Length: 323
Image (cartoon, rainbow, N blue to C red):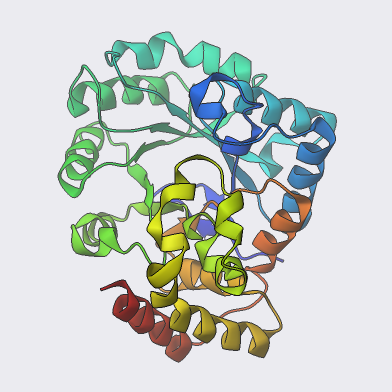
């Protein structure tokens, strides 16, 4: 059975891995077109595989397909007859070109999109809004007071903005439970810019997205360097997927390959396992899954634990190749 851990200083208990649901956008709006459209049966199988493997929460957002990801997730959970308490939902308010009042004005639209499934975690998706952090947190506090959401988080907030959000909520007796940010073995920015230190100090969980660097940390591009030609979107033009930049990270992949062989797992599972254990219980991870095999790999990352020595070894090698 998967060992659950607390989300920040809340009573909410989550599996170390959740399922990122951006890929359920069905191609709606420019943000949703980042992913290929998935068939309903494929999404159903991905969600069921995630649940069977011990995942008990799903991360989505208003901006993912203009609510389509939320609607697809909720309707699929309903069709699978999954109790609310077995599939907790985290979603996000989109702040760009909006004022904080929009948080309360649009909450019922979010609830409708989720077919009235409870919102366990409501997050401000990014820091750019027409209102201050203080006003945003005041509106979030009102949602807590009305019982419309269970907890408050932020996403892509700097250490300074995160501390401000924490302080405002604390004045209402409410904890800021999370900051969702990009983080992986190869992207250690939050370890240098104060975000991780502040999170640990204040008891705020980190929710890490892009933990596999969009496939780079699976080793598949190192095994077949022609694969980058099949990439879609901006990744096709990123140097890290080819040539000298790709070779720069090969030693890390080979170390991960050795550990994968030792534990009879995959390279991606080693990467995810490092994420959920290196900082104790501070970091949660939300890999996506566009195929059932991806979902199976995700949940398999919770089936073992790298030793402290191995965790440190991976960290050191990732720092070295990342310079």
